[in-house]
Each structure stands twice: as C-alpha cells, then as structure tokens.
Image 1 (cartoon, one colour):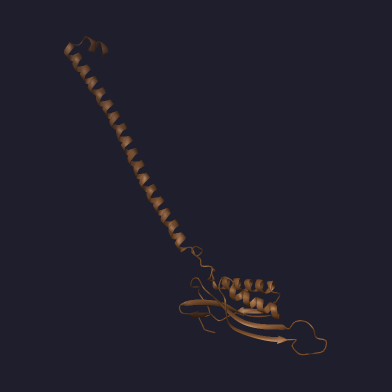
Image 2 (image 1 turned 90 degrees about the horizontal axis):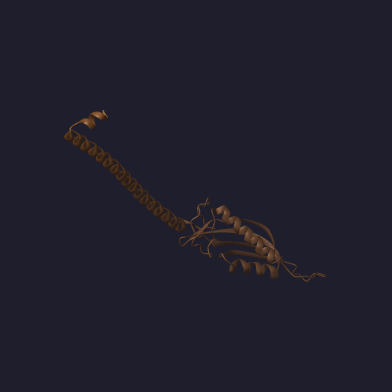
Length: 199
C-alpha cells in the first residue's frame, strides 16, 4: 500500500497528502471542540452549584433570623413569668417561694395552684400558700415576694397570730400564720387546663 502511494503520480500523492492533512485537522478540531465543550459544561455546572450554594446560604441566614425571632428565650422580659408549660411555671413559683421562705426563716406549710386569672388581656398564674414564722420573717417573706423579679403580687392575704396573751412565763416573739394568694403575669400565652377562671 505504501509503495503504491509512493509510486503514484504526484497529483495522486498530493491528493492523498491533502486528505490526510484534512483528516488530521478535522480530528484536531473535533478534539478541541470536545475539550472546549467539556470546559463550558463544567463551567456551567460550577456556576449552577454556586447559585444553589448562594440560595442555601440565604435560606440558612433567613432560618437563623426566624429562629431568633420565634425563640421564646429571645427578648424575654424579666418582669414576666416564662416556661414551657403551666406546670413548669408553677413549679418555678413553688421553688421561688421555698427559697424566699428559707431566706427569711419561715416555714411553708402548704402550697397549691391558684385559679387561673386573666385581666386586661394578660394571663396570670399563681399559688395559694400557707406559711408560718416570726413576725419579722413573715414580713420579710411578703416583702420579697412583691419586690423581686419576675413581678409577683399578692391578691389576698390572711394573717393569724399566736403567743400574744400575757400568759405567765411565755417569752419569745409572736408567731404568725399567713395564707396568701399571689400571681405573676405570663410572658406568652400558656395553655391553661383550668380555663381562665377568676378567683
């Protein structure tokens, strides 16, 4: 085959050479086109992925902002009672009452749920508590309940005393028994099982 080409007339040899050159050019062009096309496709995919990444970052930033707005802990006012449920809030009130009583030297005899209260569009949760102790301790406990945060207010109070008679040989301070009904305002609406009944 090669000898036939070499022995062919010059015109035939030129045509064969031109055909080979054209084929080589076509192959080179096809390879270059394929390479450029692959680069273009890869570049388009990169741009698409960048766009998707930008959208995901925007969604993540929006979700973070929405979480900060909807988070109950964010923007909590220290003057209001907060908690996951009414039971949690009442438990917090009980703990707070016990701490106040202990710091003032009085004894909590009993504590129970107060009827739910709603006034002027604000919901309140409270406790009815009985405690006893010396006059000074009871006074300090009542003062602490009404002057600490979150805000609590005593709606009803009944005080009874002992050791007030001039009995012979009786010494020591008078002991007071206090029954109080106190409430605190809620930061957010808490589902109440008692249906918002007034005391």
